[in-house]
Figure (cartoon, rainbow over the protein chains, first blue to last red):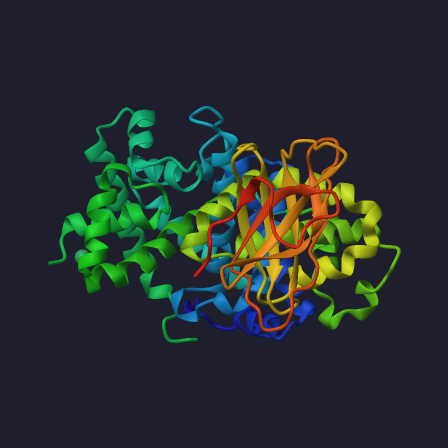
Length: 197
Length: 258
Ligand SMILES: [Zn+2]
């Protein structure tokens, strides 16, 4: 395994595609879409449930990529991470708009439990590698840290909402979030290509 | 001095959620500046993104891809873009473009407006839908929406119509824009709504319009003279046909820019 930012597949790397998208190449966008839309839809599904809304979010994200490709900062991580951030923030916006105060708990069973049986979508090798690394990192966290991060990340719960949901003191929740994220960072750091812009 | 508490604040911030009781302290941290925290924030954001790897992917329906590609600006796909019969596709493209405009506004000042715009998205979609028969006008709207300098301004209800809402999509380069409004009250037959653009602090007439029976309107402005910068917009009630200067009550107004 060669971790950091090698060309993502035989043809064109994600970064090359983004550069081509800046040059208004719609084929490059189509390729980027084919490569990552399933992953992004998975994220939107987890946040919004398997709805048409989740699909709309994915569409918005690729329109955003089309029009704002220049906002991609190669020094801040991969193209996929950029797309994921865009997907999550849009999906959470919709989730918040949907629930006035509380209620609605999409997603269902814990994310990790659902990961296992999955193969009908063929991810590129670089994506598979990235997923494996991430899963290992997250799987290595204590359950309570993992749970706190999932509630924040997918359900958009603030730390006080997480405290309420998990019946844990607020300070404990904040500590779990800090420890969890710091550990993930330590684990993933070697794979971030700061030098391969 | 960087500390564990800093790491906690940055961790919470990295999740992109309201900071609640920690907001003030985090604001102070940003104000005072801490190089370690500044480096840490993007890394923790990336760390959080790894959670995305834990959910099962799903292949979107093929139609989604088709719609997406059809809605791209025509630059490199002339064959797909200039098909006149594709009115439904255009309506979709316009809606997608409108969405895009909303999501592209990363200026902090406009962030709040964007949220309001999103909330009104269904109105908007309905308005776009109702414009289906006015496909002839599509060129202008597409030009505005697709121009790099498109701005979106939210107009709030004033005076007699506090619940009225509108957005103006405006392109300085195209020198025109269009307004999408909702919750407008019906007017007597001898009255019309008139849209004004403020240039150098003075209102300039950009045309009159009538809402539909449900109080919605989709209206395209007249062209502004060259070298004039739109600072703000307002809608007043005027005698049918409009006046060169506003005389009636203001029902919609934006916040001046700049
Ligand atoms: Zn610090």
